[in-house]
Length: 638
Image (cartoon, rainbow, N blue to C red; front, side, top):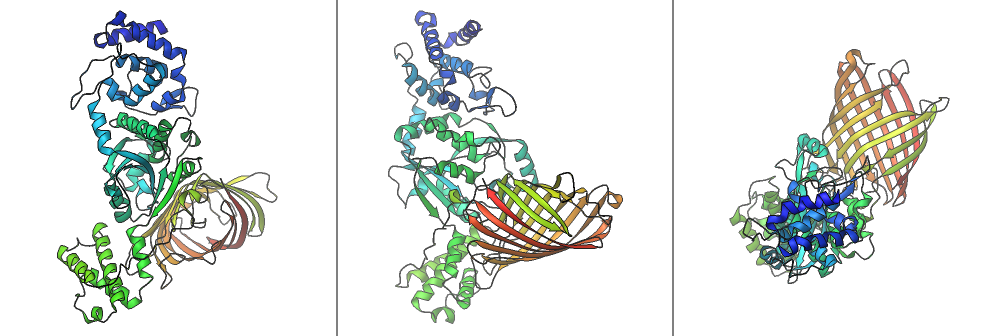
C-alpha cells in the first residue's frame, strides 16, 4: 500500500521535482519521516488541526477547505498528507502576487519538517518567500496578547464574550498599542444578529476564517460600539514561538473551517494556534463538546508560565458611569444637555460652576456625545460642537478629571466555572421531594457575578430530575435547551432594552393533579432601572411583558397561548448574598383558557467561588389550584 502511494506521489510531483537520483531524495525524506513517526507527532497533528472523531474511532482535520491539503485524503490521513507535503516542497513554482511556492504557502510545515529531517539545500533548495517575510517585518512582532472582550448579550455572536490575539510590535507602548494588529477567528457572514444567525451558527452553516485586522478597529467595535470591557492577557511566548504562530496564521489565511457556535468557535481555534506555537500544550483537549470563551481564557491563565500580566481596559460606557458618581443630579443633566446641544456653552449654569466641576461636566459631555455617535443610538456628532467642547475644556487650568475606574475584584478567568450540579430537597403542595439538577453551561442571574457580565443570563440544556416521597421513580422535572435573560438597567444617560427568551419542557399542573411535561416558549421585552442614585446594577427593579405558548395533549386544542407581566427586584444584600423577589401573572386567552400566577422569593449565598446555597420560597397558581412550596439546594460549579 505504501509503495503504491509513493508511486502515486511520484507521478503527481515528477514534473515539479528535482531530478537528482530520479527524485531519490524525496524517497529518502519520506523513509526518514516514517522511521521517526513524524506523522503521529503532536506537532504535525496540530499543524493539520487533527482531532479524534467524537463518536467513532479515527482522526480527521477540522479544516474543511481542500486547499489546506496536498494529498487527496489529507483530511483523514496524516501520513499521506506528510508524504504529499514533502513532495510539494520540490516544486519550482516562482512566487508572484497571487501564487506561492508550497514551501511558502505551507511555511510552518516546511520549517518544522526541515528541523526534523535536516533538508539538504543542494537537493532541496529553500525558497525566499519574500511575501511572508515582508509581512512579518511589517508586524515587527515582540509579544502576543490574548484579548477578551466581555460578553455582549444583544449580539448572538458575542453572548459568551469573544477572544482574539494582538500582535504587539517591538516599538509599541501603551500609547501606540492601537496601531498593533489582531488575529481573530469568526464566522464569515454579514449576519451577526437574530435567530437565523444563531441557528446557522449552531449547525455549522457558516464558513469560519482567520483574519488579521488593525487592533484599533476591534477596540472601537468592542469597547465603544458594543460597550464591552476588555481584558488583556500578555503571554510569555518566546520569539521562536511567536514565529511559529505567525507562520501558521499565514498558512491559515485563506482556509475555511465550518464555524460552530458551541465548539469550533473563536475561542477554540485560538487555542489551537497556541498549541502550534508551544508544542506540549494540550489546551483544546479540555473542550471536546463546547468551548466557552471565558473557560478557554481560564485554561490559558491556569497554564503554568503562559501568562505574565493581565490588564483591564474599561469600556467607554464604564468610564461614563464612573464619572456620574462624582456629579450631582443637576451637573449630570447639564452635561447631558450640553452633549445633545440642548444647552449652549454660554449658559449661566455652566459659568456658575467651579473650574473643577466645569471640567468634569465638559469632559462628561464630550465622552457622552462621542459614545452616542459611536453607538449610532443618537445623531452623528457635530464636528464643530465637539470642537467647541474641547476648546471650552482646554481653557480651564485644571488637570484631567477622568476618574480611575477600579479593576473588578474578579477577573473572567477567576469566576465560577460554567458547568453546575445542584442537589436539593423541598416541598411542593405538601409533597416532599429530592431533586438533582445539571446545567452544562453557563451562568444565571442568581449565580455569583464575579468574572461575568452583571445582568446577563445564558443557560443551555439546563435540566432537573425530581423524586417525590411515595413515588417509585425519578421524573424529569424540566429540560430547557435555551434560556436567555438580559437585565440591563436604564438611566438618564443609557437606555438599553432588557429582554428574555425561554424554550424548553416543564411540568404543568392540571385540575386532576396530573402533571405532564409540556413544551413551552415564552419571552418578551422589558425595562430595568437601578435604585435611584446608583449606577452599579447591584440593586435593580425590572419588569417584562411576556408572551407564552404551551403545547401538550392535555390542553384543549393541544395548546394554550397567552401572556402577561413579570415584575421583580434583584439586589445584593452583601457580596455573597443575593435576593430576587419577583411575581408573574399570565392569562392564556387562546386554546386552553386559564390563568397561571407565581410569587417567588429566591436567595443565594456563596460559600466559595465554586459553591453556593440557594433557598427558594414560592406560591403558585395553575388553573384554579393554589399551592405553596420551597426548596433548599447546594450548587457546585465545575
